[in-house]
Picture (cartoon, rainbow, N blue to C red):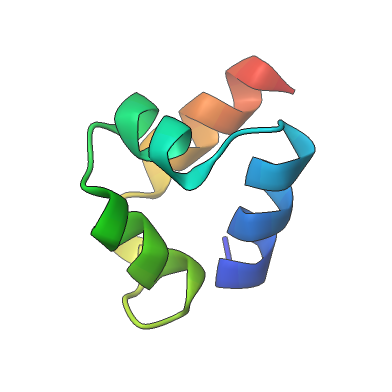
Length: 56
């Protein structure tokens, strides 16, 4: 998942950054780094797909 896809998916689910960070049990700043492309999402793709798969 690319950073722009993460942002689009989060917004399509009407989740704030705080809400998604809470669901993923990760700091909001880490989520912001993922969305900004500053940190790779490759380290935790399973959690992202699990959250978005369940909510879509």
